[in-house]
Length: 449
Ligand code: UD1
Ligand code: MG
Image (cartoon, rainbow, N blue to C red; front, side, top):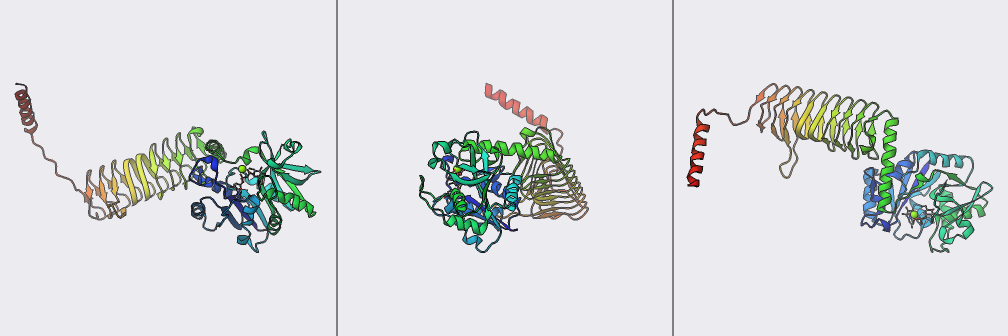
């Protein structure tokens, strides 16, 4: 059965005290809405509609950057959660199957929870609402359950004292047949304390039509929504704790787990070893058996089997390390492929380059890739030996098996097997130092007089 996701993300998030729309604040180096989507992805949705309002253009841009198949629709005025869902109607016109409503600011709903909601649908419930037992029910909507059926949801503002005593609360996640959902949403009015169109009203409307609604429960931690910077920080901590635990469950060694920072999309293979204080930005994949040594920072890169990175290395977007490659301390790699067995061990910048198999890059080598306007490519062949402090002025090619002498500034292509020597010739002046020091001392003595 096809599934569509509707992610509500139009709210401003006033309490964030921010010029940025709330759902663009990040945890795990990904915007909040991407976490809601990642949960929803478990249902393998055919359609994803994001309802944006505050900061529409910025939210749309971020959504498209994540996945250009996401349809972003605008809710120009935020008249309530039912009104928000209604904005997705045209985008899903004629689409069969279920629709699942998620909140863009609620990042931790687990796949298993959404699957439990799907199971309740399969068992015949027309509308399934995700609830949780709240430790402090506060201002959440309350789920009214009678004889196993969910008969209505009452918003805190509209609730009687007896209803406020209910601890089973509304998370906001709803699943129903898509056509039915839009039909129910169309019947919602705004005669309530907030003057808003409440999505929660669809439950009473469904009951009045003789349809069956049920509540599925999940742990409260999953329903954590982000409204403030403090909650954002707490969510980051929760995300990191979960990512570390998952990595270890998958067979990754984390020497000091609490010091490793993950991104939402970090992928690490079995038996990889991650030393303390490693930061993964977005877009990192690490294959099995690789070793990421202490204090390394990686983003947008791929590290193959048995490669070693760091300590103190920086892999920037487009860094691609083949099997057994080595990138050592104080080395930066950007948009460059380091082929099998190649070594870049010390104090080096390799950018916009290819480094061939088993090449050895000496300490202090720099690919001078930028002329102030354009970026240029450097090709370093297989089995080359690049002497320490070589400056490779791109575009330039070092042929296979070639060598550059220490301190060479390479401005011409070096043919296969050749040696490039490009430095001032050293001379020995046997008497010069003694004469110089004598002259300087005499000058100082003259000053004192
Ligand atoms: C909502 C629920 C409440 C539930 C709580 C859980 C309703 C009427 N109430 O209340 O039962 O316990 O969430 O956190 O649904 N949004 C839009 N457009 C709008 C309004 C909201 O996109 O016009 C989005 C917000 O950006 C947010 C989500 O919907 O992501 C929830 O909105 P919010 O205003 O936080 O609803 P609550 O009052 O907290
Ligand atoms: Mg809320």
